[in-house]
Image 1: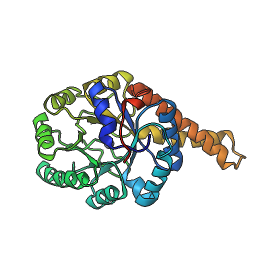
Image 2: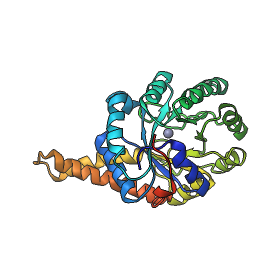
Image 3: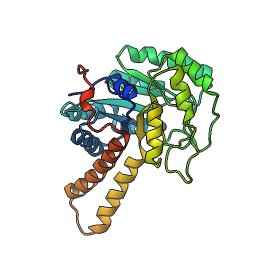
Image 4: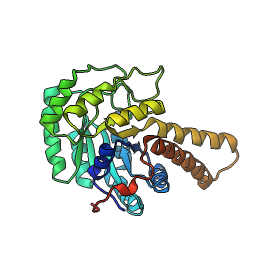
Length: 291
Ligand SMILES: [Zn+2]
């Protein structure tokens, strides 16, 4: 099964309350490793790129690599652009073939964010792509985007009005999670997910998942967080595996052996999250035409 639209992966996940891992890859090795994890577990998978990764590799180069890899996997997969405040890059990725984008207008006031998100939803619709919306910034800097300061969290009604006005496909609510590593156990507000889903039954997106407990994942997924972003955990697996191999083999200069070690660590990290979120074995619940 080749590349499918985002909604064909998240509609059944939201309906049946399992979570789909949305993993931020950084290069070809990590892309191949997470696709292999999804294949082995017969799981649907969302591959994401940060804006920084797209800028570093180039939209066309990354997309070409993605299609060559993704067209060969037997499970449904889709490509998403994570936090992007830059409208030019949103347009570039949609035009190039990304299936979904997060227009991150959290630095704008809610009215201006709403106005621009409406435009992005219309633009994405022209490509058959979906849009994730966000009004409160997730605490923590991720690939150069965001701030360590906690931003303002609005009443849930503001989120519900934003969703109604913009008709975003999915929404990233502020629930007390943060990007990066937690220094102390986070104080979550999971009831905000339920309050939004009660008014707008659309897939919710969990940001800042690295470091949450399995119980916290399970609870948030049951409330409607169908898309669960994983970024920091990949960076840790990727960098630590390099360090581990090089420390253990200081005199070796064998790139394929290093790559194999790193790939195994990244694949194992992806498999852990796919299993935890309940999407193992769900690949064939998603039926669709290719895009
Ligand atoms: Zn995020």
